[in-house]
Image 1 (cartoon, rainbow, N blue to C red):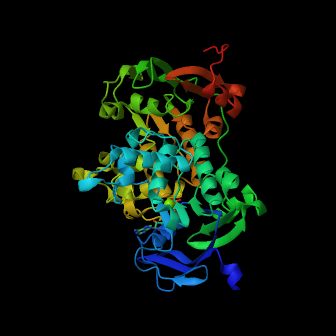
Image 2 (cartoon, protein in one colour):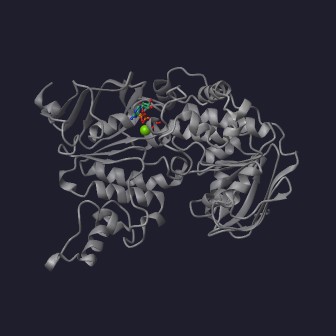
Length: 508
Ligand SMILES: Nc1ncnc2c1ncn2[C@@H]1O[C@H](COP(=O)(O)OP(=O)(O)OP(=O)(O)O)[C@@H](O)[C@H]1O
Ligand SMILES: [Mg+2]
């Protein structure tokens, strides 16, 4: 390779990583050009985060990994590639919700100080807001970051990663949009584009292929820890990309939509109010799937937590006619309700336990055999069944939950609730962070749950998903249900129209 070709390129060669006997990265190579946006793609568990964690110095690679920056060899030894200008935003962002932007940006690097070392807060605020502005965001730096939108929080995390802007060269984002409502990612892409134009390179992971085609210059695809392709986005289409990612997997056909919702009313919600939602009424019948749409902050993102009793509410909730105590999720569970929360990993799992224990956390009693002993074999069989149905990897029931890839953790939490055969199933952003194969499996399982007589509510920022699944779609705006869409009215255009504008002729 000539010197010219090597200019402006970071070359990574021979990256491997084994955990015990499992080789999860196998001789992966990658080159990152100056000023490009490079998407790192692959199914759940294909090794994307592991590669990123090696670059950031969190994992040590197997011997033989080489890095060259502008043709000059660089050592990976101390802080990963920080000295070579790599900056990282990991999936959980690592922000402290209760602290504001100024404080989050100051964590670890400190603040501007005046005489006697006093912190100059006003200067710190100006500086924080200026840094965000340069990324394209107007944010009041005094607001706790927990109150910012997902895109704004990501921007704060990026601003923090780029604190020494001038020496930064490659920004690496692991699933920056996974926990982000679909519409909010545009602002993030504008920011990535700004960085690209300033000559920085951006490497990002995403399971949303539309995003990849909208913003990435090139893609690298990993499958089972191996690199299967690096290719300009312009030279490939979506279905080719899916085959590269997953091999030739067969997708289960969604069960045909039947006439549903003729069963008895399973769930009744009357006069429900919370922080945003005002006086919402709705009913869901056995066998029905009701989709909930709305922009972030409209009530869509609050509804299921309120129904479940996980946040403060007023109003009446009935399951099969039986009123449920307000604010007591345990009473909801006892009466056959299940909530798969949007913030799954944080809310509903125990990282140090095995996959099997996380799956059976909710009801060990089901497997009690003689003398109250758990019937281990039955439990093992059932857990294996779920592992297979959702394509959870590794396929071992004893794998420690925390060592699973992000998407596989999501699948375990989902299976945990599905296997309880709930009467009322509440799904909040059910396919966040999972690959396209798992997404189709989750959609099938949701429809099967409805067919088995469950009343299902799916809240999602993914309008396409709602169109695929729902018998009815309710759209929230400003805390109120503004429309109920049925049949041929369930389209992405129609949903978007009602999310944004007050329409005079809406009839409920
Ligand atoms: N600390 C660990 N111990 C054992 N196995 C691990 C550990 N970390 C990751 N793995 C395994 O390595 C494989 C790759 O995981 P990784 O997190 O890199 O996947 P990913 O491509 O980021 O997937 P996702 O899209 O689901 O986030 C998985 O099978 C995972 O279970
Ligand atoms: Mg990952």
